[in-house]
Length: 430
Image (cartoon, rainbow, N blue to C red; front, side, top):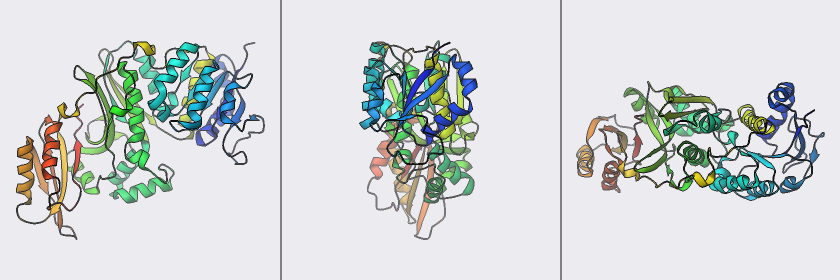
């Protein structure tokens, strides 16, 4: 009889509890698929007394989380603590140094330290897996690393943060403003009390940098991701986008070509005919373009107990089968250090919104700035006066370099005509 795969679980929050439940409920099926049983031996978390809705008395408890790495009789450590550094990173380093397999859902740690950890795992001849770190229960890591391995990928993009997608689709369907939609997301548990990690695009950028590495065979370069969040999107932008045949989504996009590696997270106008336009609520979706396979589209729940636990256990099943393989689709030494593409060189159409005083000469000021910056205006509309005497002006541009739009906005910086912060969004054309 094959020996069980024995694991230790660090972190017993929503996902940790979900892993325990999943291994209990689907035990027989998992054993058949893995070729042997998967058993939790020890656990660790900050609060030993907390009721997590699962029976933990059958497992050994370790107060020192990092000590799990060196316990006898453990094959795999599962890290569900979170954070790019601190106990999570210490546990990862100690686990791999001890020659044990390591599974994590920690996208921040991978974005900052994934290459070093994967390199250490290669040298130790052990597994380093992280399916749950990107897009929850969607098997996009496995899909890119294995299913699309024969293809040259040129683009990977998608909706990588369920909190932002919930907020934007709530604004879209209910006509809510940003503050109300955010408060609703917090009440439902989709957003944290401090939501900045999500709404400012940082979480999506962590995930995008990982996807880019897998897709293009490049070293992770989280610091090169151009960031833009959704906190300045207004209900008027949502309505205007709809009138133009678009919706607004926070899109992470990475593209590799002769100019280098372009990485950006930013709210975008997405054509209503595009599959991403139909991704609603807290769902995630990832699109990859391959030279032989064509377009691949992955969609599903990007977070939560069940989906994330499912991805964690999928990694455990792989390890139980003896599947190790390189963490980033090829050995670390084969990954290239991509040159960051100049975002100003990227050609695309754009949407711009200005909230300005309703007085003569303002439209002339805006159009002059566009002309002087080298922006060709495709359409422009002015909405009626609000209670504070300001008006909403929205325009779309013809295709042109992004630096021209920035040059026009720079010319308008500090204008006394503005009553609110201008908003710029690219129009997705892929």
